[in-house]
Image (cartoon, rainbow over all chains, first blue to last red):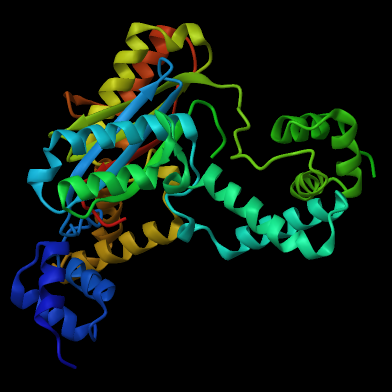
Length: 199
Length: 199
């Protein structure tokens, strides 16, 4: 069992324990990171903390509160350098996104995040709808795909028309910014709170 | 199979479909709300929307962004009336909480939310620590309980000392406000974003 330098580094960053302690704990845990953390804690060389392993990402966390505190959005958008994080166009984009999410209520960032079960269920429903409306069998598939496309446009942030300019999607807006700034930009995560909603 | 008026009401609120449609769908679904929604959607009488069933709660959603966008908090605090939601003391409390959460990084609102597995694991670790330190067997339980109390103080919002006044806990601060305002106040939920952290 060889413990790699990068495992030791990760464990040190997670626990704040010394290098030799981390190496010994990892060896004892046979490379299992979680077990190694427990071993260190039992020896008193580490304290529990929220996983704060930082990935190499710059960017901004922004928030937007609407309607006197009845609706709020928080989001994180990443870029590659702190220089871009301080860029005015980047900041404006992030704040536009926060407002857009408040207004347009997306359920996912991109369609890749939707579980296959949800998509299957949507397809089934669209198919039955079309059959109930008496549509001919041979056009059903096309109708279903069309409705699924509309579903993405309603529910996926990147596919939604931008609320301040319905001519473009958020994906277009993002693409434009990436082209202008020349750095990769990733919409990382968001949460939208509506007062009193069930979670 | 009798469908109750409150089921029909709930289905109407969820789907926006008419009363008779909802009643028929619920009967067909034998009272299963989710199936009834699907039936309505297949008939084209309902569209999918995010569950926005509002519970009878007033309050505020607030956010706090720290360190030039490297750290952010969003939270919801509920009260009973809109009158209180607009009260200055209530608003100040909510904003203090947002700042507190940014600084103190709680993992849970109250200790009741912690899973039994987490607590068992903490106990095990504290016990081993104490044994490794050569503490006598008869005081181990007391040491473990003491360390668990400290764990709650570090990780549970209500048990944390308030960052702006370490003499009181958040629970004390909340209790003081409830006494002053005379309305039940509930810290409903929060999210804390640290730039680049792993989720």
